[in-house]
Image (cartoon, rainbow, N blue to C red; front, side, top):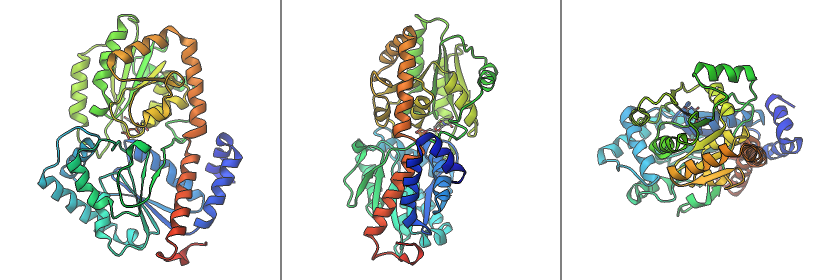
Amino acid sequence: MEGLLQRYADVAGADAVTQLRQLAEPLQGIRVIHVNSTRVGGGVAEILSQLVPLLQELGLDVEWCTIEGNPDFFACTKKFHNCLQGAGDRPSEQDLRIYEKINAENAERLKAVLTEADVVFIHDPQPAALIRYFPERHGIWIWRCHIDVSHPDRSVWRYLRQFLKEYDASIFSLADFARALPHPQYLIAPAIDPFSGKNCELSQNFIEGVVKDFSLDLNRPLLLQVSRFDRFKDPIGVIKAFRLVRSFFPSAQLVLAGGGATDDPEGGAVLAEVRAAAAGDPAIHILELPSDAHRIINALQRAAWIVLQKSTREGFGLTVTEALWKAKPVIGGNTGGIRLQVINHHTGFLVSSPEGAAMRIRYLLERPEQARRMGEKGQKYVRENFLMTRLARDHLTLMVSLLRQEIERIDTTQWKS
Ligand code: UDP
């Protein structure tokens, strides 16, 4: 058995890997393309950087392409993102023209690769309009939505829907997010790779080194939230909760670790708001990390006593999965994909306000044994549900099923049935 698959057999079980091989068998030789808008930063890039090599090792001809945009384009798609998650300024007519123009340019750039593909996965709204420029496409096109679209701004949804309805299928992370679309919709939760720099085991020496570099103290309560600086992640709410906890645990430390995603233009403004809210408090450590600081984030997650993800909207929340995998109790916003992972009172606590978060932080700091047990449950829960082997299995199953349904429509000479 090859490298990645062998390692997966060790953690997810040999049966899981055998099943992947069986599912991959009829897909040998098909050409699969994933398209998103950034190679670094955010959950989608994190998933694709692990899923693509795994599918390649299973013998599929998979390629990951990213679209290219300019600041105006990403400003528009960030407005989409905010409006689809239910809050924010709508894009102007001019924004929409830029969105379509950049999609048209990328369609031209990716023409050969997308025209020939048997299966195309388009991730999130940024490249969603590409489909308009491929009326003669031969493959199956699937829109993969990673964000919380349970309560979208209606006009933005209506605008995007004109593109989305052209797809052959769509995938959402949660049943709550599925929308009325004229094609089959599938529910697939994201997953993490236990061997990536973000999640692999680390030596105690390395963890202590990182803790020291950031002037943290392993012997004092350490609270952590890892997130892009995005208002939906509610970093200000985390600071409020921390201030409430400090009156009971004066030695507590808070780390807000984040960095930019190249497709997120609002990070700088939100970071400035976070700095202002922290007001120079030396117990609040705001870390701006480069997008490849995977092991550093891993070490911070391992050093943390409690991990927070106090989002007010969350598509899935890979940071939650990462923390649970490291056996940390998670206090998460009662929203979206966090609810799939934080099983209230078992793997952590779901909260809806800074006061609620503070109460649960206090509760866990006062009961370290319970915190430890919750962490153990969380790790087991991730092992059973949110490892990359499960995600690869869902993708393979979906492709086998869709290709069999579409057997008449596409050229199947390229792949064995
Ligand atoms: N992440 C990172 N550096 C940062 C902030 C986040 O590497 O400064 C990673 C984080 O560890 C996780 C992903 O980016 O793997 C964020 O995914 P999530 O689903 O939590 O949120 P999204 O950013 O996609 O909304």
